Picture 1: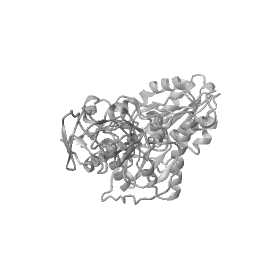
Picture 2: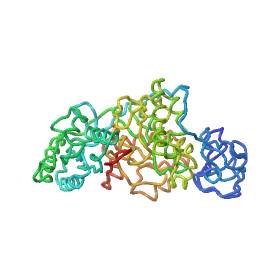
Picture 3: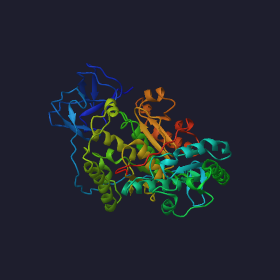
Picture 4: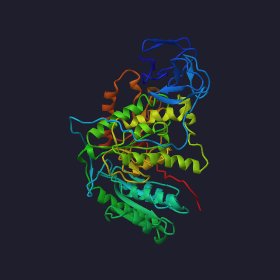
Length: 494
């Protein structure tokens, strides 16, 4: 079993793939290094002496600077290195040839073809409140409506949120966009939009954002106008189940699949195992004509030029520059430090700086060219790799992926989490210990890369697993009955 990894030939730091002890003698590219202190799994150690102020190199790029002289064989972490990042930057487009991805086989999944031509991977009934005031009503309808589950209906779900009123400006727009996106999502065979009646984002306003809709698929109920809103809601859900129940699974080309990519609770192995495996998956799906979406913009800081230079043209490059700098300006406009990242859990797992985190995070993008850049709440329209504006927060970012059209979210983690999103959320562990410890959370294990499984093989296994989920296989969060949504809040609440 491999005990450590030097990711790139230019690296002066290597990563422990298992706990290492002081006195261990390790050989990298013919050069021996004797460890002078214990190195926890996922953490870094120096392969040479690094002077104070010198760059710490991992993934072939700087992840920070030494705060003091670091001796060869030393543990490298937050105690002796710091970020090297600055604030808003000026970038130059330096395009690099992106991989030309092709597939020798046509893959399909068993999904639901909708009348508008789109495909869904679930046939669910969604109850979507326009405002937090009717969350409990939505939950009550959801609970009692389980009696209507039958045939091809996968589930009946209510998505609670605290917004829809007492919001101003961009916050109100965010709420309306996200709710409209979810109402139009093809995983929902039928939707009950549940309003109160006096809220800012009331049903009449929301209809302007929804656009054209099928009256058989989308029903509306204003609670203030109903004598018994729960009973009336149940009657509408019953109508929706009759409509949606007519859909059955059929073969659909995987070019119709849209997959969101997100990480959270990362550790030092995330950028070595789980994220590269998702990158390999992304390349396979794109080779088959499909679409992937990468988000959490703050976790692109420090690796953004790698994405910028993969943009298909200069217009996309400029959009990516704006994506990055707008988020930095958002932080500074609230008097917050741009690089207040990674989290305590990330640090415990071996991530020492935002560059360290970002260079690992962006491994999920694979090698495909960037073909689209999306604003928050904007539906995807271009096949291939897309970048989406959303924060790093797990629930907010995963909801944003679903709202932009993702049928499924792939969520890599080194520490584990039970949360879900509005669409099937596949939890992918970076290490085998987490997979074995949290069988009720984790769907797919990438820790096998440490044991020697080839990345290509693991990427193909993940690709097949995603096709299985798209064809109806439930993920652990679905089996547990979990479903969450969260909307990005930036400003004033009245």
